[in-house]
Length: 96
Image 1 (cartoon, rainbow, N blue to C red):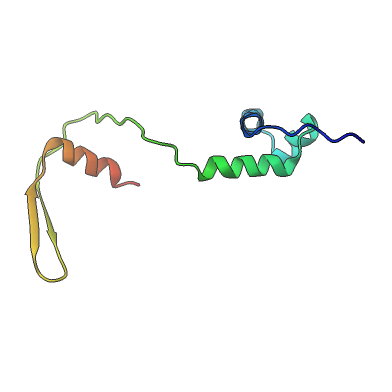
Image 2 (image 1 turned 45 degrees about the vertical axis):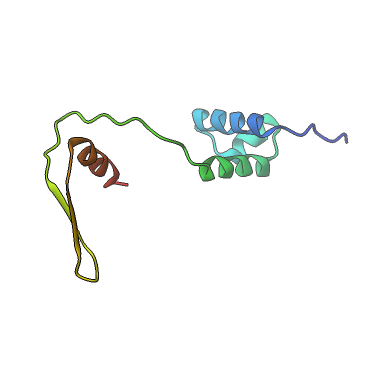
């Protein structure tokens, strides 16, 4: 039996996306499309491990401005006024 042509990681990523869009498991998709299932799982793991990058965030409502104070273990307190953009950043990052 001739050996199948090796697929590039880009091709495999496309297969993973098609399987997700079709609502199929990777195993079912691999059977239907003559693709090595272990290659699809590997491609998906690379996709999950890769950072997705930055996402633009826009706040719908104004953010209250308040001072920020950090008390260090040695008793020193560091404080700074919080500007609107810093407040937006902190509120955006809190849920993460």
